[in-house]
Length: 459
Image 1 (tube, rainbow, N blue to C red):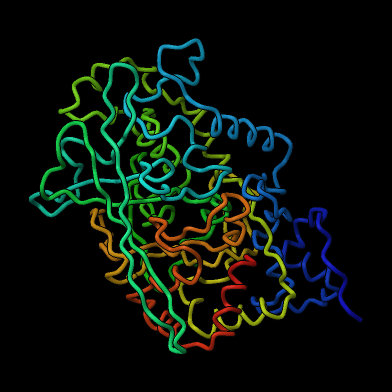
Image 2 (tube, rainbow, N blue to C red; image 1 turned 120 degrees about the vertical axis):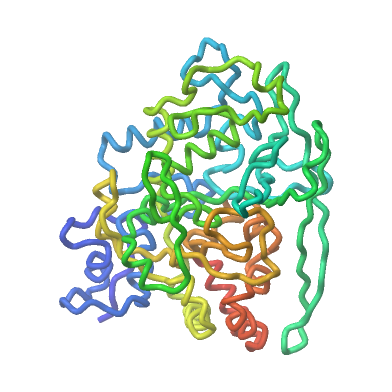
């Protein structure tokens, strides 16, 4: 007898059954024998009990289905703080003032539209939903802030404070061919700067970044360190901002230990808001007008507000993959594994305990990441130094939900700086530890290449 179809909205599974058991029960396969992790029925529930079957432009903005009523209320409080603009202090809205003095955006959603991914600007527009990090290496070889502009170019200033200038992109294109003769083109960006306080110091290092989509962050936090250690690559050890050290796992280069720290860092650099984790303004000694500006309090971002936004970003649900039964998608998943993509983009994980959200434990999830750093080759090398992270090191980004990027954000510009115009270009930029997988992709039959891309579109 054929297994029944999956409903578009499933009732919550009993806790003891779990997401994998629920998937098997739906398919009439709950005989006590768990299938291998690649079973298609299990893969439908990419976020375990945190999966939503939504494929609209709100697909990245859904709360985890496993939240209770009070947690849902907290989710929507955090969502309001994430989406609403902050204002200059002093203001009648004293819980939302303190913007700047220097900033990139007025709201988190400016960089993460619909909780999704930023993109490079069109034409000669300046950066808006991406940013330029800057830094230097000190005499001891350690990374440090650029002396005039700090860690990040912040183009806007509140009244009385001059913004730091604008960043524009120039694109450089190169061409190549697959083994069967089909041509392709790749592009890479370079930044041109129109700064207001003089040039960067001669030895400054820069790094272009787009803001990432946010789904499933809490589930990724709940993967145990021991599970990550079973994979290749490595994890940096980073300061948690609260007197301790932790394994980095969030961010393009795994330099953030958790969503709370990541959220506070984004508020600090992007909106210019101080917090207990980042209590100092971003003004440098050269920015006298910035240092003299009014403040929204000390700190400007209260702990309860920070915690609500961090909770929101940690509890965004994972959209389910689509067309899982499509033969081309199934073949694409096979190709994904045959080429070795799954060595870093590890398909399946089991979560452990989350430090604050109990419902995220013991989830069978399909994030397609090992959350670890890998040498990705000279083509993707990054200039800006970081503690314990080499210039060619990048964290394996999760792939869940990536196939809905065009629906949610209207583009498919991928990798850390948006250089890849689709999945094929993203694969072709892989180097270093991923050279063999990239070369296998270029040498694969065109039907297999298309199947792989179709699989990625389904995620």
